[in-house]
Length: 472
Image 1 (cartoon, rainbow, N blue to C red):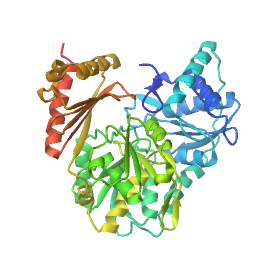
Image 2: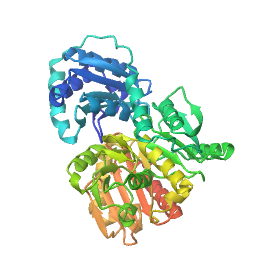
Image 3: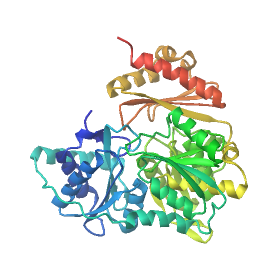
Image 4: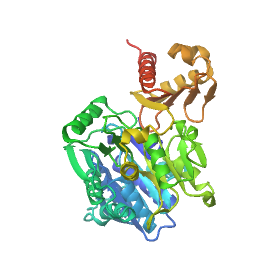
């Protein structure tokens, strides 16, 4: 699997990010996307993967070779880097594989005006391939000292927006694992008034996928809640742009539910969200408008930008929980500046603050939406060609659908905007999609009951395994 653009940014095997590849893509990005930068400086950040330091070093060499100055943000969350860059109209480069296994890594680009979009990919790819063909070499450089103001600014962003210790009285657990923003998460929650119990600080990278959480992680968090009297356990994925919230009962609150609760709490009028988010968002009637997109934050960003700001505050979120704001938000006497890229901290703060204000446990807040329960899982190591052939059959052939599950044979609707999304005559939804970030087939199931969703998803995953990974 070569390095290529996926759902959001470049992804591929860690060893694929050679100095030559980094030089070509960084130079192409700066040439194509950064003419409007306020100065010729580039922010560089990274997650805690073992491969990230060498890739950052290669990117820094490429930045210098292109005539720009690198600013070393160190190990910071992706949204921290993006927020600092956007406020100063600087380009940024984040080295991260996000939630995928450590053998992979990635590079996420930010233009001076915000997230790198889908329409940027083709010209940057073409320019990078041309540079690779030339065989230019970038001399190694020494990274400058870490500029701590990038991380500090991220903490201050939320402390300023939510003054007055709004989380006072809460005891919250933070699963540190290898999340790059783990210490910042603790600092933010404590400065907002919460009592924090932190645990599981790892010295090696742990892949945490908030859409397909390991049951062992949920059980570990449940035991921490029980042992320490916690209201919740919170965490993020590896680069801090996808939140994880486990309620007081030990149940995960799915990312799209977090997004809906956050948007309602913030007074959002227009919500932009991908097809993979729960249909309870429309059924609940909380928002003036719900806009659906393909999966991937660049599609959400583009759709938010195309929405009329005169119709009220605009925000987006994904099924993974990452929350994006297109509008500056007035929160009492404070203002939270817009951040049109995925962020994990805002939904964590919002739902905890909502629980305090409504004097309700998180489990009760989550139940305020109509009873629609979506859950996802993934089948790893599915070759993209194999996945594409499978999806083609599911979209076009009743027999192919019946071979996976007879309930899929004659759906009420088939949507192929991103993968294949089947709406069944019962109202249940099954969505198959080949990941854009890794060789994985994802399966999303939504029904009106948690146990039914869990059972249906388990049955489909078993049959997917037989279909896409036959023995022998």
